[in-house]
Length: 228
Ligand code: AMP
Image (cartoon, rainbow, N blue to C red):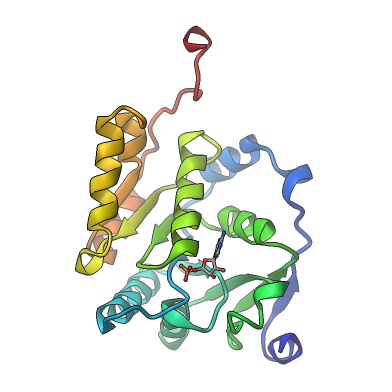
């Protein structure tokens, strides 16, 4: 399977190593210097119950290509992950996949991507996606999508990066989650400015428009000395 993909794709075996090379300041510096050129999309490896989710993936792809933004995603050829990549490529855009070696078969690594990075682990995959992207958007998806969204939002909260994070709430898919997150903030487990970091829109162009003018809040250290 990997051999087939190698033959057709500009494939890179990621040399990135997770822990030793990473510091929060590397992230922050890159974000300050980089204009919006690549967006990471987290979304389902399934297609979901209704065709509305696939239609959302198509609209997201069109919005990315219309703004000359590269797609960074998990590299799968299945579910709405595959749909968004197929549409970006069909419209002449660039789709960059990042997939762990162990999942390349299970998630049916997309055979025609602009680039496919094969990592040794899930940690490396997520870190490489986070490094390459200038912003992050969750479309409808399952546990993997939620985990990726919460991790990258957590990193924003901690000030590890200054890149915009948000979700596309189509067909009310994330209504329950949004209500819960507002409850979490109301109960003072998340500060209002950290809650506000997660942008929510129903239209991809509107969300990307907000990303283009995004000003990260001046995030103070998670715990000040006088709070310990
Ligand atoms: P899902 O939303 O569950 O369909 O998964 C979407 C993508 O998230 C897939 O490519 C998964 O491999 C990926 N993913 C990222 N982190 C995880 C995790 N901790 N557990 C499961 N899937 C994950």
